[in-house]
Image (cartoon, rainbow, N blue to C red; front, side, top):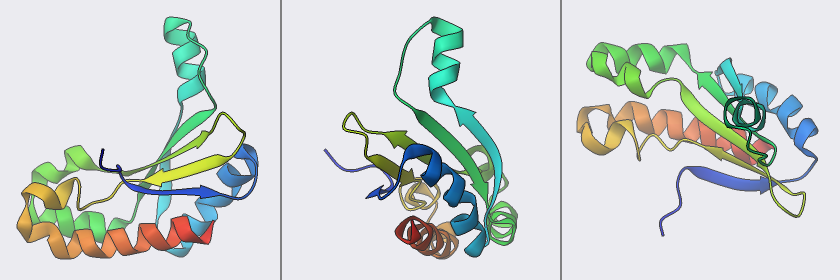
Length: 128
């Protein structure tokens, strides 16, 4: 099975990684617009216990504007999701969307923007 996104298991505990993530994203021009606590949501909505898991919606305004100016419908794929979860053994995994798997896969004109966004997200994940 192909791997989804830009994935890396990182050093540190879950809370520590979540605390560092906005700063490493900011260093690459992204701000965190949304935060979804998947564990809490699943417990509240359907009574299911799930691992610690959060999804952050990150946006780089410069690249979002470029992409939206080229294809207004690309907004359905924004912001860029960055998932953080705790593995069964306590390790923490960070997985950022790969724009080549989303916006660039069916829209060749967006490949240059997707490439820039991918590079920046990859650097942010590597910095953790």
